[in-house]
Length: 405
Image 1 (cartoon, rainbow, N blue to C red):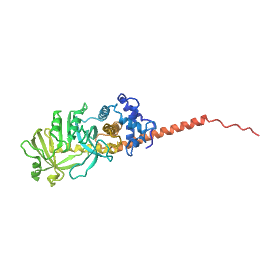
Image 2: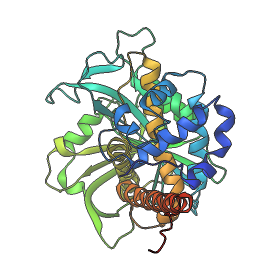
Image 3: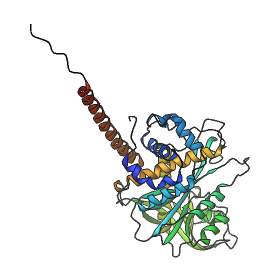
């Protein structure tokens, strides 16, 4: 990718309403920072991003923007989220799925103030990096990040647990006008009592994988249901994928109506990939959707897969967590926010290339967009050089006349 010297016209047109959020030249630097994220195919450090911006927008300009606290990045992110949501057609049933998940972006520098050491389970190796919790909006084949939080180390003064940050993000979600029903989908890390009560307080539904330590209202542990259920009670269901195809995924399931303490009436679904799998490989799903079946519950839980794709694209396409900033936690948070903003801008600019009912990839969208911008920049450079050459010939002095002997 060549160095760009002119801001793409579509970027200027889309981001024009954001000018009041910035002061001085910060708006121009902000636009170039997002463009650099979308055309950079190497390491997205500050120095690496500056290689794709014009010479009058150097690396220290980008670093100064991330260090500036005057611009309210939360409002900018909220505006870009609303633009991305409005760019895609709404679902016919008006159901919006909020998918919650977290990831660890590995870091090598030990001086990062928000990096923490941890591991996924007792058997996994220890890792060091940024712990990011993200909430995406999902329907049809679309996946749009709505917000994120960084889980700070426990020794920090303003430390908040992961579940507390999830409740904070769900409380700040602004639903689109077409939304009639909300279903929260998450794995076994998030069914805390406070989370479930917060979801039900807003009139939302949930499909969540529960840990086996939960009890039913009759003091029976869920692990006893999983362990002692006879194998002949499982029934085979064929569940469609998120992207509509002729293929179906086969699961062996068992569903029962139950009542959970502090939650109320729910449907408990046991799901496994093979009928003879051990209880250790059985997924325990719980939903408060009325009249929920085993097939519907498993199909809704499969909508967790788009958040995995979104996290992978945020890390690889726009370089989430790669910019090297100083030891200020606010700057680290702003650098992560800018990566999410670049991803939202990519969705907004390439919304027409994402067809309903067909799979898509942000990697392909970025390659096509960078190719178009690169060709436009190349043609512009060729035209400038041609005009300079013509002007040089026009201003050159004519050769002296020679008299005939």
